[in-house]
Image 1: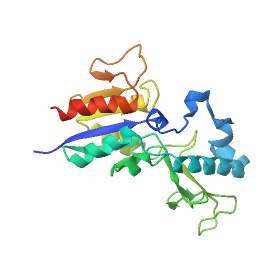
Image 2: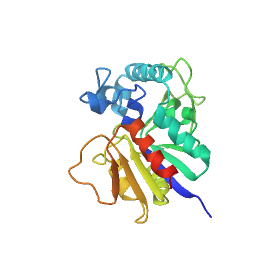
Image 3: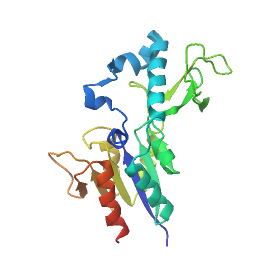
Image 4: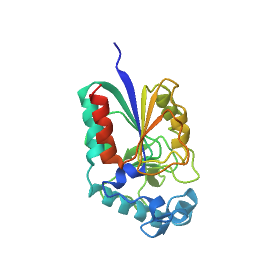
Length: 231
């Protein structure tokens, strides 16, 4: 008998419990920076060193935190081999991978990688010291963070949609169903799929088929784990 496919769709609330700041929780600011000054192609064209300094700082912060209990629980569930598990994440950190998850799709890129500004297929690991103006790819183009900035296309979205379309169980965690693309992906789960939402918030309307676990990521996934393992 084939294993059921369990897809985890994770957002910023997941990593927040590891100590990573989310811009939505601070009035659209990251570390007192306006999004349009550090997370758009226009900002990079206007002041590339400022943008690189910002992402170097975020990389430094990422290296100082650890996966939380929810990241670890997802990886441990995969290790048990009961389900075929895929993670689709809006997060640019590597906490899912560091916890042990092996099938992780990053919709918005990866902070631990960089790419050529002139050839998006040239992607390498981020240097330990980060990037500066003058950090070039072999073709002579400036390297930039491997991040999908505001205003850019999300190239991995089609892959993410296909993953969700095959889900027997979809778990939305750390991201609101009021925010796209999370809402769109959740709606693309097959009619037969179970959908769980782990979020401490209150929603004006939820599809009756969605099972809402009204807790933060770590406590909520622990409750879900008990449900799944007791079947």
